[in-house]
Length: 152
Image 1 (cartoon, rainbow, N blue to C red):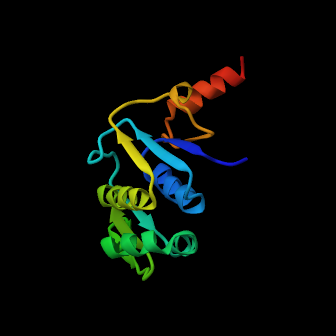
Image 2: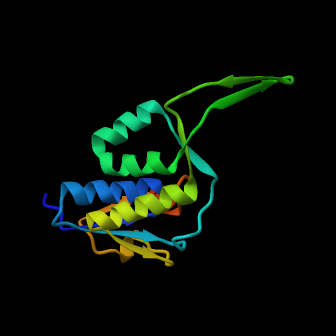
């Protein structure tokens, strides 16, 4: 199957990163990310990139990883048990704010040639694509509707 058009529902980290990787693998393919929110609004606080995650990102896309690590901060963990606080040093753990993470992934998706569309909710039936990637989060209404139709 030759991919000509890919639609990604959801402009969070998974959708944006998948759009970039698809575009890098299939440069002639038109990849569009559909995100219902606005580009500078998000939910959540931050993301930690552990050493294993960084190794996988390095193998898949070193350019994106470089910018994520540069924007992040080394992050140690602390454990508080009944007032006794222990610091767990972790030289490879990098924490990055979700807003910065999304901004970097948006830039990299666009740099690869993906189109980002914000501010409108789309349904699978509305999309003209060879492949629709559903990345609209843990409370996905798209996946819930698909599951409901599959059990009918």
